Length: 548
Ligand code: C2O
Image 1 (tube, helix red, strand yellow):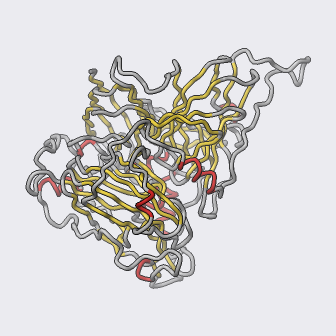
Image 2 (cartoon, helix red, strand yellow; image 1 turned 30 degrees about the horizontal axis):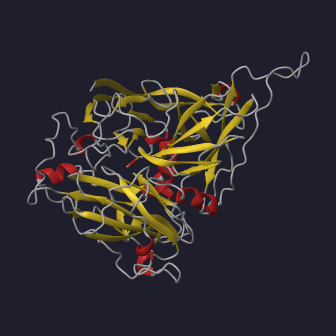
Image 3 (tube, helix red, strand yellow; image 1 turned 90 degrees about the horizontal axis):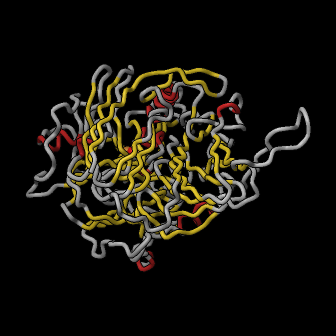
């Protein structure tokens, strides 16, 4: 196994998009940031040097970080943020994972520009369960704001309203041909006629589920969130923020130019940016237009058919096709049966005329799990407080079920509208078999909540629309080959059930990967101990762990 030593220098740098130049926060001057390529079994030491004027931390999204929560990254959960002028070295080993993951800032809205691909190849000589093409292309889908994303966040937090939607979607940082001043930067991917390549598609967007498609070409899905799937072909894939999907694509069409394109899947019917990001898949030696002078040159690329922004049927049909590549070791007997309502809520303002009260009908937005709206502790990280037995940072009374009987089809109880704020965690016994049913409350509007669990991979054993029925739904769970993921969309007005074994001690964040929802508190923490009330096998905190 190899040891990789890298440096990530976080610093502002001018980036020009949509006719404007910003000082964007970048890593090593790159946007998107550098791709990290490692093998299963390798170890990594990445020194993050903060030369920006914001606090920052970096999360290795989807990496299990076994017994090593100190390298996970979410600020105030597993570490205090890295202050301007300070540095911290993330040290970790890849244990039994391969595939496509990514890394991103885990500090307020900095991940809007601070993100990159994390690619884990199998151990040398270890085969793929499919014929792996020679070439591999990371496709990072993102969102771009005309304003500094931190100002957009401040606007949302100050006014209590929804954040401004982004001004463009991007592919590898580029909006593409359909946006103003963007043509020159459009990503072009050459491909040889007959060649098959693997696209590693990552949704690094802040707030938006996305459909992705390539004109005239079929996509063969082989992996999601660093877990192989039974291969199947489709015209379109859907990714929630945080999710990754690997697809194979073969250049078997008429030599030419074809758009790959992504745009919103927005079940909420909320305001959204109705635009499409594009890149060009370009056959090598494709014929050019005939003639002289104007009109000569390359043919216009073919545009794909993309589903409508509210096409929940297509999104659901896609996710329902995912299967683990072989029989999966799904936990069968459940020790911890949890039911979490996830969704937005509205808090009545004391003074509806205040500038801080711009939510609908004299309210501010909030979001919660089981009516608990998560507050970052800020005086220390949950993990440090947990490890040192320091009181007063968090409480362990997170409720395993909602405070009132939940009914989505009737009027949702008022007791689930106005969340209670707190820094609440839930304790899981080491090696417990855990099941969580996540139910969208649809209080403001039915919405897809892409829920991400740190430190774990889980099996998605079932999902459906309407209320979860504990008597009839479990009988239809797939306990044989359900897909394994680290982020799963809770269907709009529906539920999803996941299972995992609590085999990784530490403090692990679970949250909605829509950053505006995370900011409103759609989060909680799992505490996993081993030994009698102790974190026996967790590694000791590194000496350079930042202090609050
Ligand atoms: Cu990709 Cu807690 O995040």
